[in-house]
Length: 137
Image (cartoon, rainbow, N blue to C red):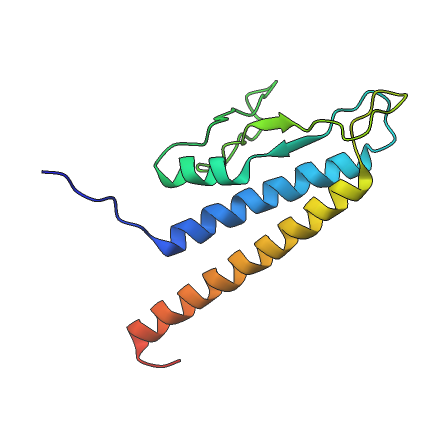
């Protein structure tokens, strides 16, 4: 008998928040390195990573954090680092840097809106579950 996987909106929003946070760090790193010669802009495929995580995987990347000492902290369970992709240069630069600050700021703003939306939806889900349990808003 085939069973349909159960969709948990709270888990979906938690995974979305984790990925949005990681993506924000990657984009911020791109902006910081906008003047670094030879730096290649990176990004995360948010949709692919979220789909993979919701289907039970750790994402297409499934990268483990490298540690050089057994006392170093690894990633928390469920905090697998997503696959980092290289972004193509829109306009070639003399120093071989592929970061376009205008594009990075646009991605940063878009990701911020997505993060705020995921936060609001998670908060609404928690409030509705709390109301269902207690009978009070």
